[in-house]
Image (cartoon, rainbow, N blue to C red; front, side, top):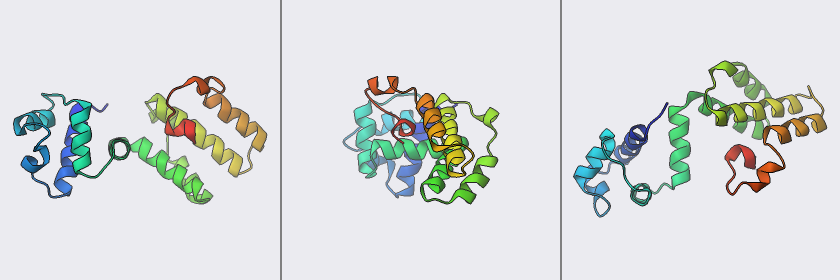
Length: 159
């Protein structure tokens, strides 16, 4: 389970990788003391402050959270890699990677949905199921048509 402290430390790792001092990084956004407390998990920053820090890194919020998720969540990282291989029509690599995942090890509902989507796509591409059958399974996974009522869609839902 990740925490806001984990994300704060991730931001600090990004800062460090760009060779920006903590003083310069926090300048005009938060005090250096607040930044230190943020990294230690003792203090929460407003989303505007986090966005401003990410802007100094020239990274948008979506990129930051996606990178954080990949770095901290091995199942998500593997699933994303499988999806990229599917997208690039590299079915052998996608299949090999998929076989390494134990469904029981997947703990988040998002990753479970991602897993089910990828499994169904692999079955379609490998012609283990008919395309129409696969599409019906995908619509069920995505909770269609109710998904259309959502204000924001996840990557899995958009895919």
